Length: 375
Image (tube, rainbow, N blue to C red; front, side):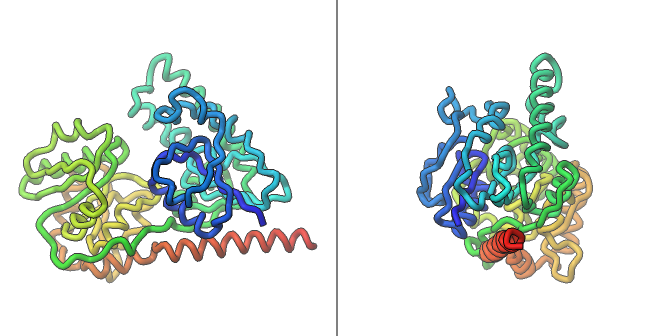
């Protein structure tokens, strides 16, 4: 069986790339395709040659590849997969739009339908200052065209894998397709429970608007007796730095070793984003640290809040007062959130679990397809 894996774009090592890494562990001989490839560290793709599109050769594509999104549907359709038996698309944007034939199996690992083209369109336009004017009209039209293309190409996928129940609902709503949930791999073994806890809270994320780091900082501004450690860098860093009071310590980017040490010793991890899945809260739990999270999205599936072994709790509204109340509720019952409970919950999302579930799913679908052909 000849296998190909196609990824949206290869420019960094983040959540989707962790999934890709483990898919390549299952199919190490697979050929790899992507719209662009600007990776520096190539170990996680096993130093494979990457087949890229014409966007790779366009001006400034290394830094401005996202600006070429309107061309990506055309680009991804130019790949010739006719020699492959199995094609796996690793997609949160355009990878699932590949063209395959009736005798080929196309399985899509879907991180989400294109967020900024669907239910998050209006949020995206506001955050980028494109909610009014001539540029707004042009962008809205382009997103309209992408939505039409996105729906059409969903019909070319034989099987969808969703990374959470939250994304399963999105796939059903947008594509009207069934999907199977396989949670992404979390490198639990890279983290461990610390011996002691210190008197501070922590949050860590890339500082972009939807992560709501400003909300977390504003809440702790209202709690001057509580210390908050903020790890991360990004476009919102300077804005957040200006509003942070003395009890809030912005550390910027930190390496993994430093992050792990802070996670181990924190009282709790604060998470205010509505994420499709959310790896950071699970890394905190793997470190024995409970999570105080906004009660929407993937966090509802990765944090135990009402069990006999709670690993965190939720705040209902994405605002300062709701978060402050959750922190107070946490402190009033802090003894209930034991490090071993957090670690035990995180173990449900291990790398081994993902590898086994993913491999079993693909093999089942391939075998079923072969039986159909025999009949």
